[in-house]
Image (cartoon, rainbow, N blue to C red; front, top):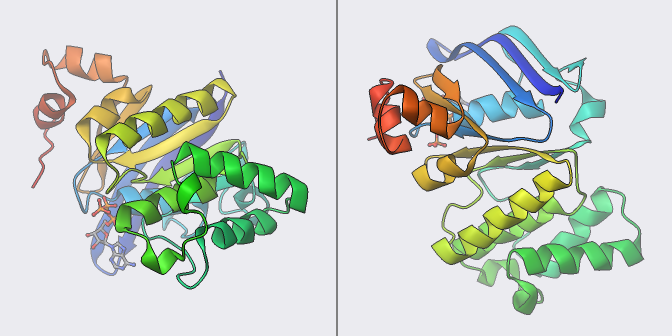
Length: 240
Ligand SMILES: Nc1ncnc2c1ncn2[C@@H]1O[C@H](COP(=O)(O)OP(=O)(O)OP(=O)(O)O)[C@@H](O)[C@H]1O
């Protein structure tokens, strides 16, 4: 396996607050890599640095062997942010068509990928509804569908399943595994323990620092515990 992402001594402050402290991380090509931590730990900030939306104060971020931020590389990343960037007045289908056009897909192909993405997130029957009439969970699912349409090599998902019920969450994770089988690397933030357990490897974040990073099984074994939650606490983490 080759490394798709390497972060070396990455730090960032907002004013006087040190939000990320000396982060060293590497992600292998083709793995599902989780970022686990409580609210405010710095997950979203870290993800925004990886995507290239914000730049670190210090340290090096290399994506596919190139220094980030890089406009060219940003195009090969599928990114689902925590806040849904959707057009409320348009239907779900029109929203997906807009994003598919941005990705440069031709009309015939757009129709196909829209239907497939909608099916994955179980929104096929609701595609003609205006987004302003969607529930919070439906909006999350639609955002996820939008990020899946152009089958990027790297998919970065910031809390993709918040507000999504457990049954659909399972099927979305099955889809993540299928994408992985097709060679897609997935970086996913979460504070849900059972999701963290499904990742190939996991970095535990607390107050802007990585407190542990390994496979879920190794993290549990090292602390002689049965669950990721217990492991997180044992490594010095804490959830409010
Ligand atoms: N633009 C900003 N300006 C100032 N402070 C910020 C900004 N963005 C984030 N922060 C601060 O950085 C810290 C980390 O925030 P971040 O959103 O990365 O955490 P998180 O782990 O993603 O949390 P959550 O799970 O709640 O989304 C917080 O203390 C937050 O208040």
